[in-house]
Length: 82
Image (cartoon, rainbow, N blue to C red; front, side, top):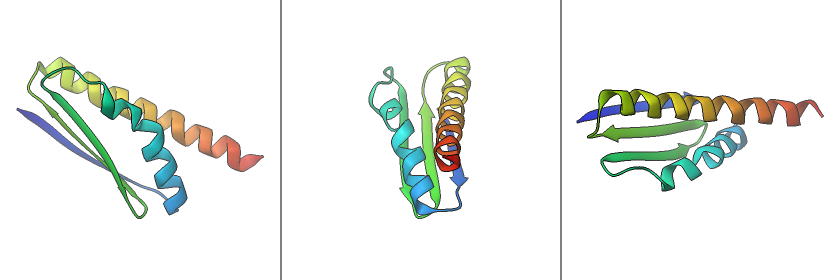
C-alpha cells in the first residue's frame, strides 16, 4: 500500500478552509482501492492519500490534488485583489 500525508500551511484560517472546501469534492468520488481524506486544522490543510492500486494511479492522484490546490489558491488570490 502506498500512502502520502500532505500538509499545506496558510496565512489564515479562512484561506485554509477555502482551499479544503475547494478540494473536498475530490474526496467523494474515487476508484476502489484509493482513499483521499482532506481536513483542515487552523491554518493547516492536511490530505492523506492511500492507494492499493498502481504506482501511476498514486502519483496521478497527488498531481491532481496539488493542481486543484493551486487553482483554489489562485482563485483566492484573485478575489483578494478585488
